[in-house]
Image (cartoon, rainbow, N blue to C red; front, side, top):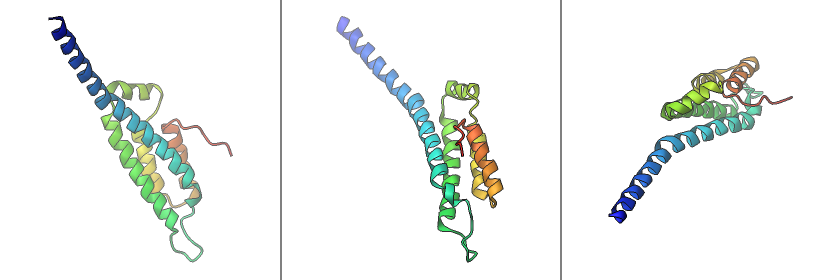
Length: 135
């Protein structure tokens, strides 16, 4: 009988571990990875702010920046809905606002002037509580 309870307890512990890993840990890691990717994209595309070449056409890296910002905005919005409720509460306590940052990323992809870009980047940094780069 003792072996039965040991087996049952092992199965229950394994199932509980699987549920925690699937519904808590993976979405949290995905959120943190998306947040890191946003930081990486902001750094990588920092010089792609100027939209036009000297001949008047759009620069290729500007188009890549727009696409990357839209993709990250969609990822951030999607992963936010998968986060466990307690973690969303923790984000609110830390004053992180992923949905607002997603909107700022869309705004960044639509920005056409350096001033608009700077406002959007400041909003993203504020909403995701990213450290402000000292220049």
